[in-house]
Length: 274
Image 1 (cartoon, helix red, strand yellow):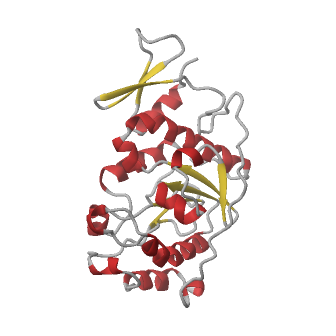
Image 2 (cartoon, rainbow, N blue to C red; image 1 turned 120 degrees about the vertical axis):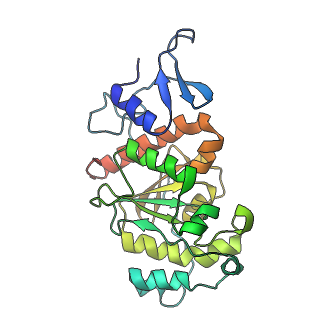
Image 3 (cartoon, one colour; image 1 turned 90 degrees about the horizontal axis):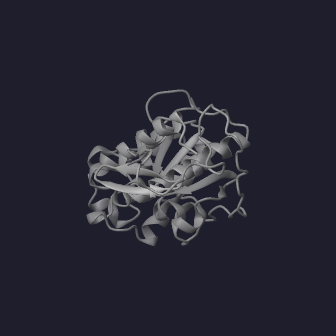
């Protein structure tokens, strides 16, 4: 079995090149990422292409037991804030010590009624400088991943333009991991963003996005491959693009996660992006 032309094109958007090797065992294809190469199994019915083209035998999405939404009370007034007021409140926030070292807050970008919402972890140095989540190399990889399933962060209709937010709105010093108190201080802002966007599906990228949304400290590798729920919205767990840059052999797993997200969107009646 071979990769379809559309699958090859989509994987190429993620920075993964696919070809049929001459020396590898039968039934395998090689995937090269820049200077590194890995061998992955050929596509099967359990990983249908996220496209308009029908898959031969799409797998049913495995539905996990829904996890209760966070019960933390929103800070005073946040539950009724509109977008401009919420953005201003985030910009002026001094709820934790991260405010002392930030250049600016990183609020979020994208369509405010997007069908797809992406939740990342914490801003890094470049995000802190530019005030936008997922910039630099990790942002380029995210854009390629989104393009592979006909989504974008650029201006488009809500079915195609995503909304992107982080669990933290300020950069931790030295890009260290977020502290529990910092995640708690920012939680109300993320809850309100989800309430305002009203997404039809959420992609949680990375361990701290999972902790904030699913209240789970399980590794990403144990939570991916299933459909979770956040406030009634289907949620797919996948790796953070920064992790994928360090571990390119897991890009094939991230591709499976994108396929599952598209399957799930179709199963809930969403039109396929594109």
